[in-house]
Image (tube, rainbow, N blue to C red; front, side):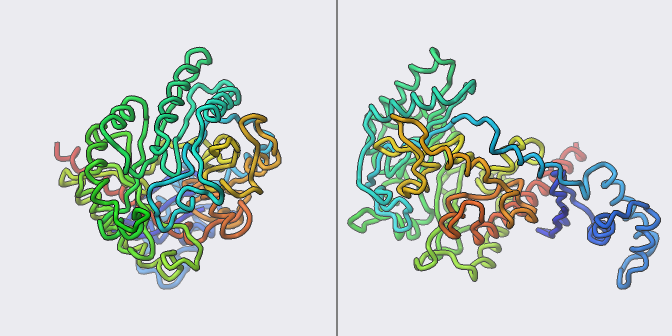
Length: 469
């Protein structure tokens, strides 16, 4: 499978199955699209392919150049870097039978919040239920469950989530201490993370975060008017002025590493690239601003007709990021971070985040759900900290959720980068976890194209610097 596109002056060709990415000139770019159907039909003879291409009308290149370009294309094909076969589809047949261990928990330490964010899927922390704070005893049982069900895996992850986790701060600290006490006896290492809106942040909390949390996620949407419109206090007043200096202190105290500011853009700010750049101008170097996922009836929900504008915003952002990088003002944007040389293992590329199998969410009263976005939907209640996993059928269903189980993913060039997308979004829009959220898919494909274009530009810049030395 080949995906070709032009971006910021680059002709980019992706060979999906091999993972190869090529930046080519105009004639090779055009020849690839002409040679692909011939190779797909099983034609392997170079002379036959050249003759077929030369017989096509309206090709604006001399015959000699066409022949040379076709030779280049066939050389890449012979090297396994173009028109590569799909060697992964048969791999997924054993997914249901594969042994999985639990490696990560999302602890809903607080089903309560001190903000009233208008797009919050957690209903201001309530998650379709009652307000509650997780007790130390429930959290302790959750960590025991994680250790007992993690097999030989050494590195375990626990995210303190909400609502607002800092509303249950003492339990967060107590659970971190308990987790540390389990490490040596069980040969485990906990990686703790926390997501916060920043309202309750203070110096004491920050000191603890910097000592114990491998990553901290800071919720802010961008420009003051955008943030305050969507992330107000319950009385309606904005939260921007309170949290910005606190977040800046977090970023600096962590050396601009091991944190990120995380925002959400909606139909109210389709010019979201301005919010990303605003956050960069505030001094943040680790940034994620993501599209809202909401019922179409919501006035802030992104609609299909918004897609062209949003794609242009991603293009503008990518170009501006390259410019700032050259100027020494670079920053990282989560959705443009891509690894073309290593990246996740095959299983992860095919099946994604591991929700419902390797990753579970735990409610304040100890119930297990496949992830935080399923919490409150009783159809996906998998068990609890006292009895363990009771619904193995749900776990098996999530085991089999992969890019080949989703018809929309099979022919998508992005499938090995997005791993099939979010199961919760699929369920919420289509009623099953093996579909895909269409708007999200379109935006994901665009982000991948931008990310690869940026890699091409950075590679060109690096080569130019080496040549001049």
